[in-house]
Length: 128
Image (cartoon, rainbow, N blue to C red; front, side, top):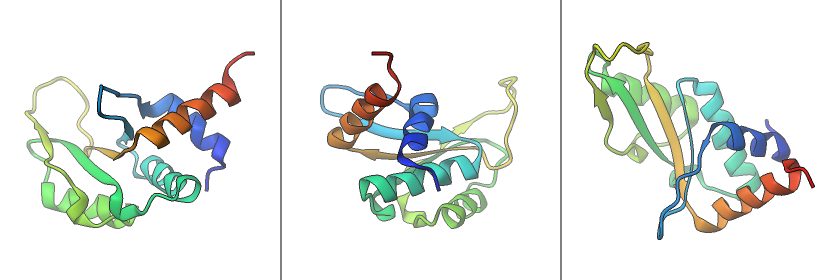
């Protein structure tokens, strides 16, 4: 289990910092199930996020078995398979390495949590 500080570092390094006028997404994307699991566990422990509220999106290559891959990620993360949004399928030939279970983005939409995390990063890591 990550400490709160370690989770802030993970998010600072690997997290999506997408914001728009009305959307604040707190997300981590990785090919590594363990990395995404650490993030999900951290959100649950320090921000009281119920796993049933976390959305998952897969980025796959056209040869990947989507159903098998969703099952793998859902089981390892302890998140219901119904929490997957539409997968993004990429055709082969992009020249990039193809990962067996694709990439998975775990995310929540929350302005309050996004701001709390970003403030935590500033307090912990920015030079004063």
